[in-house]
Length: 344
Ligand code: BGC
Image (cartoon, rainbow, N blue to C red; front, side):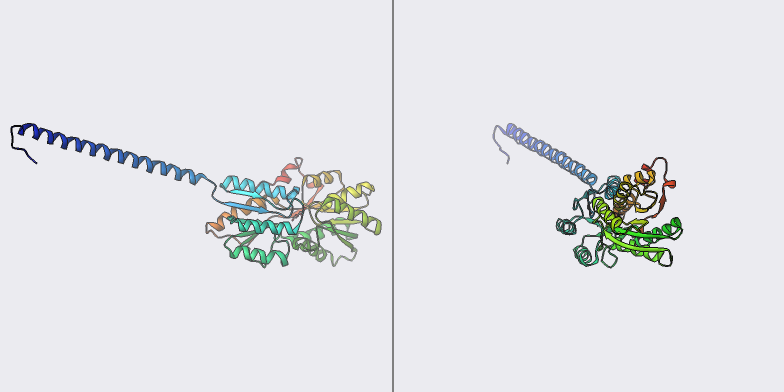
């Protein structure tokens, strides 16, 4: 509005002044808005980058026994892969072998919707339906060390357990000249990998006329129970000349008893795995031979394979890690290298 009075000039000046101030305020507000918008975008972008650096996935590794030197090697391999590939890996399960607790841990992991589960397929009847349920819920499962071949698990990484038993039988024939009365101590009668290791051994030795399998006992995968069983066998079957232990602590329990009776020279011991105590008894000559597995590699590969699966890359149905016979003379001077088996 324009006044046509004597103050015409001043009124015109005032309205220009107000207009100019308004423009200035608008420009300041606009610039501030732009500045804060930039800040928010920039901050948001930074937050996104940080999120990218956060662990990509959360996996669990559930073994049959947490506090077991063999499984600690699997754990070490899996944890190394988790670190290299930026995922969280939890190692959870029964402290000492206990199927119920093992199953509960799997159920809880599935309920908490982890991104992937690595575990053993110990026993058809209990593990296969559970693995199927978990996979149907959308959580991938990879079996490690022991397969549940008829389940819907997405892949298996570990020893060919039948083959490992078969080469154990061949080694026994070779080392004893085909003459031995054998006692078997096995982790347990129900687990499929233990059954396969026994079956492979029986098949390899079935045509060797001088090889007799005298008895078979369970150790519940503990060294103490393996020692108890070995003691009982030596008392009840003095004709026994060889022992075959099919899980990691069996050979160690047997070795303790054989040393106790000072029968190292009369009794041949065929063990499983190359954990520190086994190597100790091999170096002393009490354990003659062991079947080597690659637990560290199993753990490492299992994590790699789980990431591949989740990200849509193809993964073989079965990955057999190496298994072979190790004699004391094969041991490297630094036996730690055989224990760790770092694949890198
Ligand atoms: C087997 C594992 C088992 C461990 C027990 C190993 O030979 O591969 O499945 O849990 O022995 O000590």
